[in-house]
Amino acid sequence: QTLNTHEPPEVLSAPLDRIYLQAKQLSTSLGNAPGSKTKQTATSILAQLLQPPDMAKVQDTIRELAAVGALTEPHDEASVTLLGSFCLQLPLDLLLSQLVLMGVAWDCA
Image 1 (tube, helix red, strand yellow):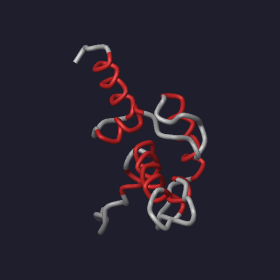
Image 2 (cartoon, one colour):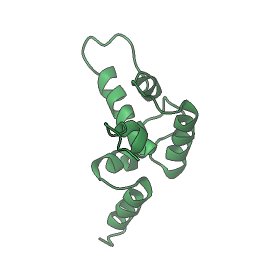
Image 3 (cartoon, helix red, strand yellow):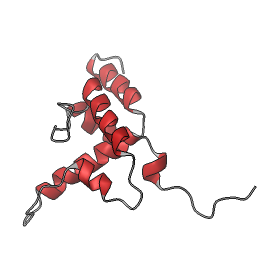
Image 4 (spheres, helix red, strand yellow):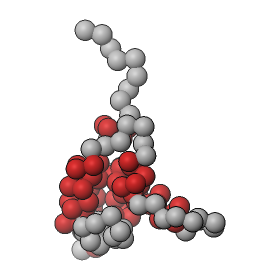
């Protein structure tokens, strides 16, 4: 057996829910930039990567993020909720971030 000469790209090894939320945050920032003519969606940003994730998995991730409350709706034009923003700030899995936020909200922290 031989070792790979390069590590796999983070977009292929990191949880897709976190990658999608980062792309969503980037698309929002790009849309608010002065002189920005076209609004890019998070899915279009991910599709432009050198090794993009499977778009069917991206759509599943969007539905999952909406189901747990990280997005307002299960489509690409949805907004990131407080939970979604909180998840981006913690180096935790989506459900663990949700658990931490609920613990803080219920004064259990």
